[in-house]
Amino acid sequence: MSLAHHALKSLTLSGFGTRQQDLLFRSTSHRTMPTYVLTGANRGLGLEFVRQISSDSANTVIAAVRSLQGELDDLKQLASTAAGTVHILECNTGDLQSIRAFGDAVKQPLAGSGGGSKQIDYLLNNAGINATPEQSSLDMTAESLRNHIDVNVMGPAETVKVLLPYLGQGSVVMNMTSGLGSCGKKLPKCTTYSISKAAVNMLTVHQSEQLKDRGIKAICMDPGWVKTRMGGEGAILEPDVSIGGMLKTLHGLKDSDTGKFYTYTGDEVPW
Image (cartoon, rainbow, N blue to C red):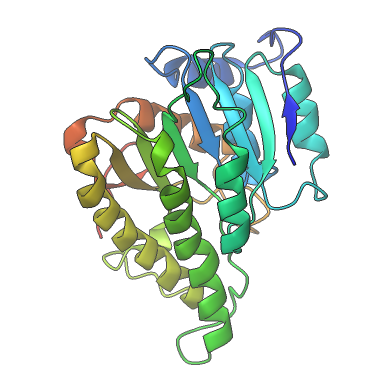
């Protein structure tokens, strides 16, 4: 079962500040009428991704949320006024059966006018958890590690698998990671989360090698320390700046960039 929201009127930019306008226009894809698939779309970074992408009437966003009975008011309101087209579908990235059901559900919004299917131009594996930030390497639990691996690693891995029929020449897969997943930075915080993000970095390297012959690029992206619920106290970065920077980076990728680890500024991050 899915909910589809089609835009009824164009988004006006009169209420945006110059910084937000600049980010929106600089981050516009060069592709004609691109389709984006985004997990974890109902709040935080995911909601801001939908906001910026759907501000362009040429764009289609398939916004995946953990549950259609969850916290969706902000996403539904955004979808109802967006210039672009926003479809809201269910995909719990911690549940393999839910991900596989999502793979079936996308058939409808991706259906082409000639009987074929539209290509997914950008697959943004944004959903993730940091459920036990207090655990260190000296008191971490197997349960916590398994939970983080299931959602943060197997989630994006399975999502790519089920959506592979819709990915093709020029498609981009972005796996959301973190600076905490960089071994080179040596940031000993949120141990189980950090381990899972280091693992998703390696997943990205493998995906990039195994998808490049199909013309598909795969990268991992650090959004920075953003002022969201997950970011918590001390976060310094506004969501619009982080998302605007990530979209600009995504839209500027070359074939030779596949398999790289970026931050939202477009700079590469040490592994």
